[in-house]
Image (cartoon, rainbow, N blue to C red):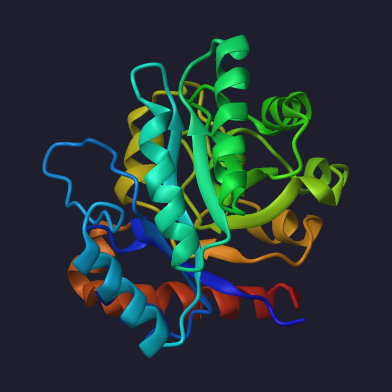
Length: 279
């Protein structure tokens, strides 16, 4: 079965949902992934269809016009200073727009609290038929594959999954062999991108808050094959599930424009897959 790709919001950040849908279609993506839960960042553009009936209608019309399914919305963060009740209207609107999944992450090391809270978010998502995919990041609350698996196991719910981002997995020292040993039931979709090595040539950085770690993640990710992450090993180790390309790179966007960058992401990914024998 041919691989399916989604265009993630962070690849072309700040782009309104209707333009993102159009760009995804014209570049050849199979799905689109929208940010409809606010991050509460200074200067952040607000694209919240749950609060704006006209925006909801415009997104719905664009999805239909371009025959572009909405795969997931983001970002349902588990953090002590955030009110998870804010997510419910976003989940409801997403489900009405045809979404199947929600992306989330954990931002506290209080295991008992984040397990209880993640369970509440998962139950909220299930009300609307949505799957809850929890991403691990080396500098977050859930920092590696094993911590993520432990969380999923402790939730005892059928709509929760591990979300592997190939950059964050590489930074966390996750290998294809480790993923291959992990039961396939844990995985539902992947975030795809590459990234540079640290000063010593290792993808794993000594400091989880290293400037390179944060810069790369937020604005300097690389096209597949241009960095040092063992993407082919990771992808081959997991089932044939959708790959959401999350590849923010402000330099490439400046040179190519948002549409050009989105297309280059997909074109390079497909060439990389072909060169590495990934069907």
